[in-house]
Length: 169
Image 1 (cartoon, rainbow, N blue to C red):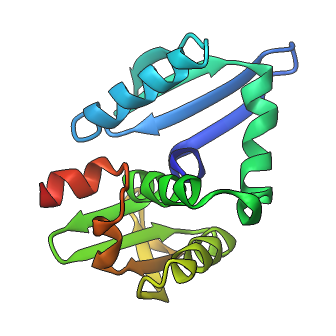
Image 2: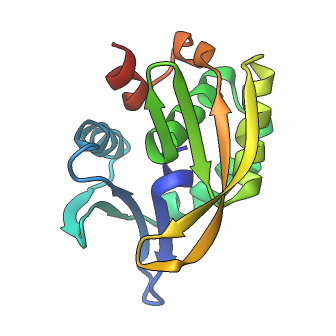
């Protein structure tokens, strides 16, 4: 889920398979720490740098590079615990969480529809709506963003979201 929202992967053409996560260097320090620990647990060596105001965690791994696209392709076969973790990652990457309000925002409608379906499986109230956001670099340009309201019942599930923990606990 975290990769779906704030991840990037590329092959530089020289057999380097790069997987990066772009986080907020002020608000996402706990998320970054958990991510680095997780990557180390699977024997990867993450590097961390701040570039253009973004905290980037990077690993070079062909296996992770190849595995990531398969995650979204196989969401229908994953366990409930995995799916709750996936939604937690989306909330931490593309979510806005304050007490009483949780919203995931993303320009990819398919990603929002997948999250909607997962939340419906758990009988959690959800609603999708389109929104237009102004590009901070070009005030004349507006981008379509899809928003998904996540019912606060999700916070009572055994989730891993740092943003929920910040807002509620």
